[in-house]
Amino acid sequence: MRDGSGHLRLGLAALGAVAIPFAVIAALDPRIGLLRPRPAQDASDGVAAGAVREPVPGSVPVPTRLPDRTAPDERPSPDRPCPVCAGAPAGPPIRGTLQDPDIQIPDVAAERRAQRERLIGWTAHPDRVSGSAAALDLVGLVFTVPREPGAGYRPLAVDLAGAPDRAVVLVAEQPLSVALTTAPPDRAGALGLESSAAFALAEGRPDRLAGFRALPYGAAEVAPVLDPLRFGPATLRAFCASLRLWAVQFGLPAARTRYTLIENPTRIALSGEAVHTDGTPRGRVAGRRLARLCRT
Image (tube, rainbow, N blue to C red; front, side, top):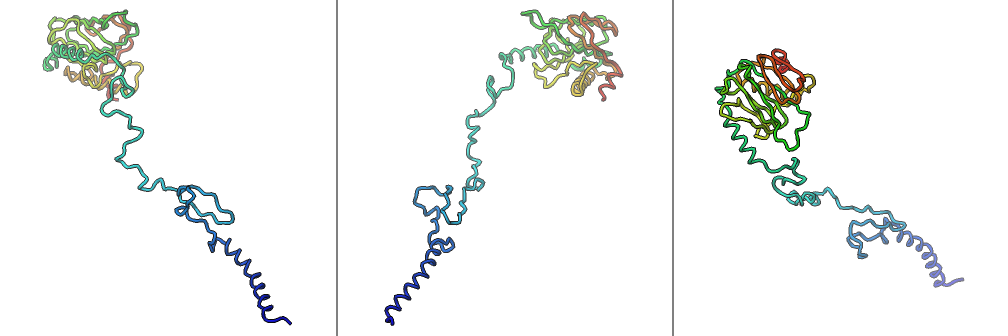
């Protein structure tokens, strides 16, 4: 028969055998948290907060919150300079740089201003132009033959002595030097010019021009040289807008106008309603047909 101490030792041993498994479970169970990983802000291992950690074996991974790139405090302030644009120069584009889309040429602004003032001095008062002609010829000029090396503006002689009741407007895309003959010699406002290039008069005098529109002399837009046989809607629209301007300038209805396209001329002469030239005529449209064309 055992004594009381023997029974006590047996009881403690049995209790320990039962308690040990429970202690191991408590230590490993993440719900109890005795071995739960410390939060990132309490870590002392030098790893920055927000970094991705390797999961602890046997534990439930704790989601790691990365910085919110769309949070208001993370968005760039509108007052901060644009890092891409920081090197862009302020102010207007500098000529000769990639910002300047124009073809680089010598500075001819002063020359163009002087040319324009000279031509204005040779232009008749609009009251003298309106009603000075019974019909208006617009003549489109196209040049496919190159000028002689070293030559200046293309010379073009325009003779209106045989058509004292007709006026002419030249539509050009290359520089011209125009020599004009009229009857009487001092006839006012018999010639107009519409050009995307510069032009000059071989013999200038007051009242010789009816007016002009030229891009080098400050015009915002000019008529294109229209091919009567092949044209697009935009070309026709711009041409007809110019035709109406010149018809109003001469005080004529559109039905009293005519358009002729001539290739490589050096001389154009009007005799009554006939047009003579050393160039090659490439098409003509006149009168009511031209008026209907410009209404479309």
